[in-house]
Image (cartoon, rainbow, N blue to C red):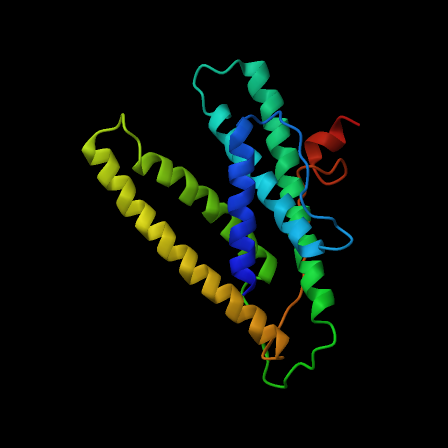
Amino acid sequence: MFSEKANAIFQDVIETYKKLNTVDQPFTNKYDRNTHLIEHLLYRKSWIDTVQWAYEDIIRDPQIDPVAALTLKRKIDASNQDRTDTVEYVDGYFLDKYKDVTIKDDATINTESPAWAVDRLSILALKIYHMNVEATRTDASPEHISACKKKLDVLLEQRVDLSTALDQLLDDIAHGRKYMKVYKQMKMYNDDELNPVLRARK
């Protein structure tokens, strides 16, 4: 199943990142783009999400230097754009993979593309990892541990449900029961021509 492969890659990325546990560490993709394209994209996607998770933690420090916070905000914006672009690459992979499928007359379109389900699955892997850390802390109160274990159970259930739904969606697309389109996100705030503040400064 595709979701099994994706979840394993996401877990590998998080564990690899945590060995150094710093946003400044170099990134090396374990998968060659030419021979293992989807694995390459999944690994890249998860790395972006893992680094951004750390960015979001850092920027919430109430003692953060304002100049440093602004610099970090720029990095978060760039990361968000990179994340969106990578999601679109993943959907491009699926479009190409299923391009020769004969679509049934009664086929329907899904509310989200496969890659955006992959995006949710990647974020869910991070939630599970960090909630497990909280649920196994030795310096937290029993109440904290109990609450986090309950949340972890919910997150694990969500992963099963989302993984099942994603695999079913891909099977439906592969057999023509559903079809997919890719709509570019068309984010405007990073574009010099579409963001009125940036345009005014040109």
